[in-house]
Image (tube, rainbow, N blue to C red; front, side, top):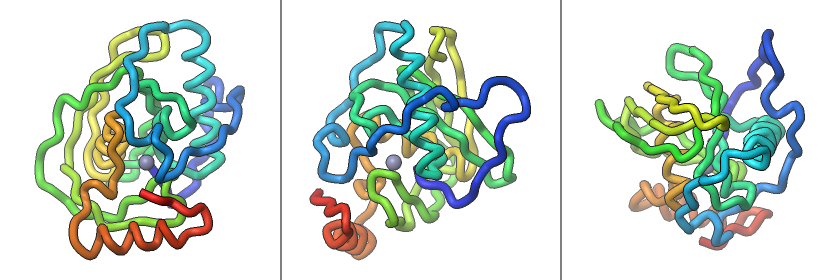
Length: 190
Ligand SMILES: [Zn+2]
């Protein structure tokens, strides 16, 4: 998901993505964004490389979340470094995530995507979300989100099922963002 601010580097431990490679982003119109991603079955070194590349690519693009199919890998992995509405920073990755809860009030808020660069639209999302999955080492992990971070968790979970935020839009909001995508320099054709 696209972000609007730059986050400070971590004070402790290795900086996620520091060893990663910035990879080309897939864009609206690429079929890899429209197909459900595969479950990860091999928790080996290649998975750790993928997570590092996701962080490196997300930071280079000033995003707050990135799914593996956005760098052309059809696997169920996403990373995030995203504030919530209280400006608490949430940083991590999830392998084989399952969105186990999306509830609370529905909020329409501005949402963008690194696969539709430069565009955003008011998109409805639940205010609370819970994702269960695994770390790169295969340890179970549960991630709770509210506000903008809940939006991020829903957005990235959607990516792994082949969905984009434009799929949640109707009427003029949908027409406008698709028209702007078609006219954009990167030439998104839905
Ligand atoms: Zn996105």
